[in-house]
Length: 145
Ligand code: ZN
Image (cartoon, rainbow, N blue to C red):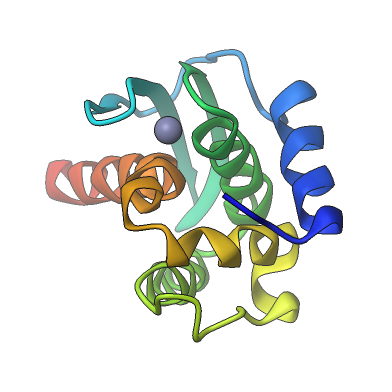
């Protein structure tokens, strides 16, 4: 897989020094796996005043999956649920674009480093794992209210 060297560095940096890693108590905890690659993430979500109060996680797997969870937790923490939804939508559409959508850096920040992954169908699930875990968690919290 060939990714732009700068982006490769952003991904490796998140992989080696992940942000928000280490589970803390939240309103809900979910566990997601990507069987095709063997990636796993456990995500804990705390909602405060209709905002993403805290995301913490633990996981194991390939650099793309783990870096993507780190990037996602940085991006979504502190955002309103609506803002987080719209960031999630931007990331998912970039991942489904087969390389056509390079991502908006204003919205996705370090997440644009994963744009190149969308050209590799086998790896898209790696990049989406943490984001789908967040989506599941926030949906379940909503249902519980
Ligand atoms: Zn993977």
